[in-house]
Image (spheres, rainbow, N blue to C red):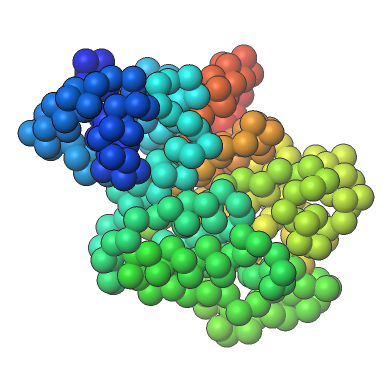
Length: 326
């Protein structure tokens, strides 16, 4: 049932108290109301049955802008984290909202694919503990060198630990030194089976990377800043599971991608629930490319980004599949 405007304050109070663990006086301070009002709202939240993370996340999906974005792009669901509402700091809220949405989307016994990066790492870091034995968390791409933060194995392992689920890591590098070596490694039975099983996942969690000269692929040494600049000149617009995609969301036939040990992008698109989380303002072009490429069925973004995407989608005459309607 949609949240009524009059119930927004109840959901906010429940979100801050039960999800963030704030005391009642802290909730009162954040919402600029009395402590007595907080106690009343929490009591009503319990009576209404909205004290769970699942229902509280409706606060971020019950929005006209979210519905408009879904209608325009063909998304199944969009969750929009406000930047101008009372008590909501998007930097702090984004990973918490994404973690709660992620838990909502998981069913018992499912296989879940997880990528890497700062956004996914922060989601893993705030993921509530749950007992989801029977769920399998699968790493979507090869690994990076030990000094690098936000590694794929870290993200996969931490999410599996939080869910009390089985974790399956890739024991292979993300990028090999030669195309021949990468092709041979993909042919190894263990790696081949892991890559083939990714399309059996029912849910995937990832963000889309940018192609700026300080992007993750550059920082981890997979590409030089000059290489990344040249790939941008060739049409690269974003990164999905370590692989470059062009402005229409298509896999780029380039040396870097051919050296990658990562899920086939068609395998990712075959996953029914593709949860994409984008927080940074500079991810607009990569996000548009990911949406055009069909890499999102479920999206978590900020209000300002949602407005930019909707405006662009309507201006360009893009249909629900990301193609021009002309």
